[in-house]
Length: 84
Image 1 (cartoon, rainbow, N blue to C red):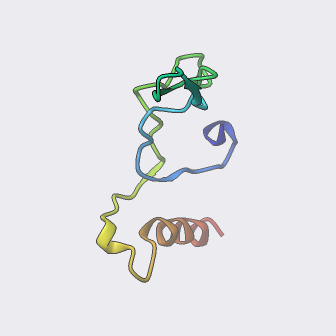
Image 2 (cartoon, rainbow, N blue to C red; image 1 turned 60 degrees about the vertical axis):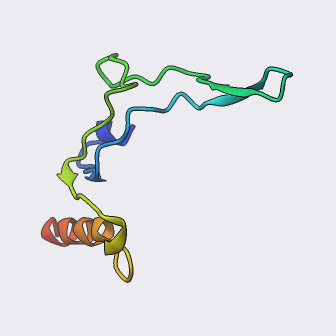
């Protein structure tokens, strides 16, 4: 995961705590269920399902803010320039 990379910063909103690479399983009655195909763990071995991953730089975004510029990209660029 990127959080393990030295010097890497995650920008944006917390993840929803779901991964597991869901795979479809057809039950044969016009119903398909999606079940995880792996268990996602944090570097300390704790499962992050239902908990998510918090960004280093929190940027809350409303859908109406992304008309011409992306606030997350703008925050990431600002952080990159700050680190130069």
